[in-house]
Length: 282
Image (cartoon, rainbow, N blue to C red; front, side, top):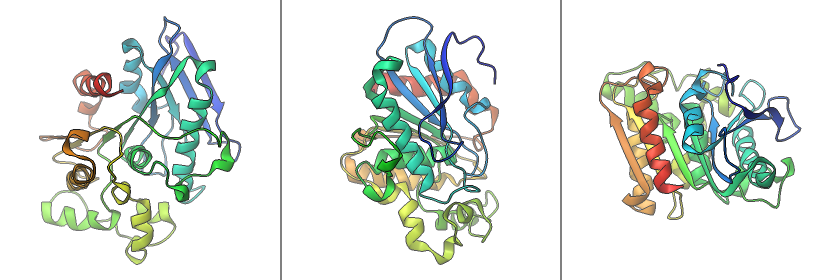
C-alpha cells in the first residue's frame, strides 16, 4: 500500500512498549484543523499475520476525504502472545488515541473501530466489553483514559462462538470444517484446543458481553463466506439486538459475497455504506 499522497501522517508511532508490534499509523485529512472523528482499524489475518500497512486499509483510508482521521494499528499476533493480549493491545490503542487527541487533532469523544475477519472480532470485542477489567491491561499506559468506542464496523468477524463454526459450515455445506482442530487459528489464538476449552472460548467471544449499553454496530457478511460462517454474524446480531434493542444493530448479509479478500469488499459501494453508518452514528 502506498500512502505517499497523504500529506499529514505519522507512521510507526508506539502506543505501548511491551512489543515491537505495538505501533500505529495516523492519517489526517489534507485540510482542516479538526478535531476530526476517528476511525481505528484493526487488520485481519486469522490473528496470525497481517499488517497495518497492507492493502486492507484502502477502504478505511477513503474516510480521509470525508473528514475522518484514520488510525491503523498493529497488535501482537498469536505467534507472539496468546489471547487476551490482542484485545489488551486494541484497548491500549483507543486509550492512546484519546489521550493524545489534542496533539493529533482528534475528537476523542468520537472514536469508531473497524475490522475485517480477525480484526472484526477484536473491533467487536472492543464494542461489547467496555468496562470488563479482565480484557484490559491498564499497565500498558494511559490508565486514566477510557477505552470506550462510539461505533463498531464488523466485516465478517467470528463473533458468535469459535466452537460453533464447524457445525455451522456442515449445516450450510459451505467452507471447510477445520476451525476446531488443535492447530486451527482459533486454537492457536487461545493456546488451547478450543473444543477442550469452552469457557476460554466464551471469554474470547464478543457475543458473551452483549449488553444494553453497546455502541451502534454495523455488521456485514457475505452469504457464501467459506472462511467464517455467515451464521456467526447472524447469531451475534441477534444477541446484540436482544440485549440493546434492534436500533443499535444493522446487519447486512450480502448475497453471493465470499470472505474478506474477495475484491468486492474493497469497492467504493461497500465503503460508502460504512461511511453512511458512521456519519449517522459517530
